[in-house]
Image (cartoon, rainbow, N blue to C red; front, side, top):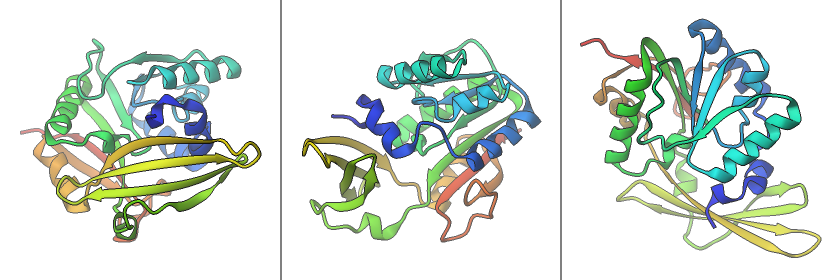
Length: 245
């Protein structure tokens, strides 16, 4: 089963609502550039909902109907009107331009090929205001993870009575990591497995891809605490704008 077919297990690992540091970072940019904000791959609303709760007009698109339903359900529980629709980040048309477009939670890494990446940036350009900003977060590749022996399960942790293990297969030719997550319920003994893939973007390659697609990097952080990006940073968090030729 695909990871995004099970919103419950997804939220079990990632948390139903994003951490305060992430939300604070994003709200700062929302306040500077204004609204409405567009979140791509908005998932179950872990980022969209706290931003909406802060009074920011925000719209989300996601390819998974299961994720969208979970987002709407959480919004109703919190008394929020969530504007989310089904859409593909590789090719979307919303009939509106936005001062701020965000794609957080490493969702950009599900674009596994160069044509998909190019299509994404073209879609973003069509929807970004002339002086707007794009915020992208991806992992900083962790070499020990990529070098794990194929088929060996590693323990990730325990989440609400579910023991999570994972096995990883990294393809050096495509730079795509294929992951399987296995959730073992401690009480019932039932196990469910979810699969997903993530392309790895090495730092200089990531910067160059952004530049080649007509964007200029304004800031690059290593985490949501605004620490500078260095070799040991957990994330590559880029703030970019369309380059004026």
